[in-house]
Image (cartoon, rainbow, N blue to C red; front, side):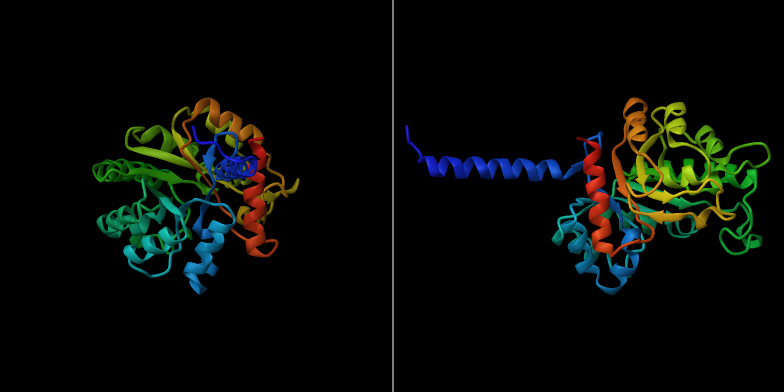
Length: 298
């Protein structure tokens, strides 16, 4: 049997330990998921230096991304840049209006990126011609029911392409409309086999609804999470979207019970940091977020 020197043995052991540490650092939170980020977080940076921004995202420790606000490039160009940065696109965001107008094109594009999820990031109106600018007119209960109908149709179509369709919330989904909560109506009226949900925990809390309750009361309907923090005050702002964004762990939201509940009642496949604004230099911000998520698993 070939013998190896003590020096080589120690060196090899150290290398294995370093590799194991690197492997562990790729994962975060009690669910043991890879570190993920919504690329909307770095929308301005991508517009200025796409490849450089992706390299910085990777350097901060992220391995999975959710596409949004991408520069105008072909799917092949975007995929090549992601591959170069060792990033995997597992999901993509699109507003309802784009999905309704360019559905097949979007599915083909996102499939080329490698996405396994297509997420509707904002709702649509049943009668868009009279609705005005997106979001400027309040959504009726009939509009929300229309969205549920369309999501079922879109979900059946994406499934044929090997992609899961889902919906991502902001705050309007929790504003009681004609005696109903739209988010609950979407959950009730969509087929679980066709439509999943990506729960934006931060915006749900801003809207006055705790993610723990949503996760507890709707088992196996939520497969992805958006993770963000806010500096919330006792008196909420007149416009919920004026809530002060900050880095994870520096605001009001405690994600320990949220992840704990998710582990009990959901099969969460991806969790994405979404840093909608920066309190500190952006590269430092992304690292603060990544370190916070890593700290939750220890």
